[in-house]
Image 1: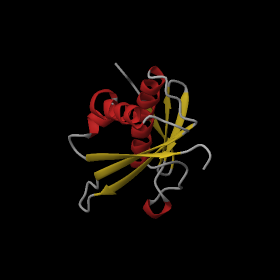
Image 2: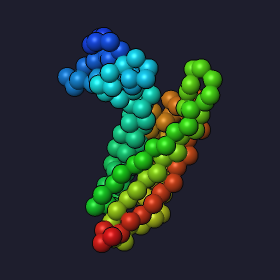
Image 3: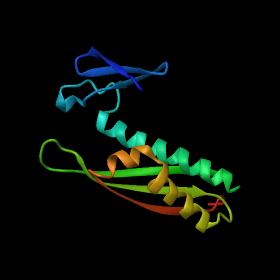
Length: 140
């Protein structure tokens, strides 16, 4: 069983401690917060990026593929009605390196999205998640 506790820090901000790591979430000033941390919805995107990113890099290392840099960008659209949930999420996986095998990059991303990433699995019934892959050479 996983247990996480959050406590009202001040105004609208909440602080959670997860395995000894403090995370502060807050609302933006326009919604009564002090902008002391990311909003919970944006933190969800960061969790998705972390989950799939760890999968992908682990799979690539098993394939003996090591990019010199790896980033993931998430763009999300929210619904217009309350609760304003994400209706679409697009992930862009950006790999940097020379002679990176596209077939292995595609396989690693596909395995993460279709099999391993628990955050994607939890979200996929309520939001459309799409992705693309970009490769940049290390010399650019």
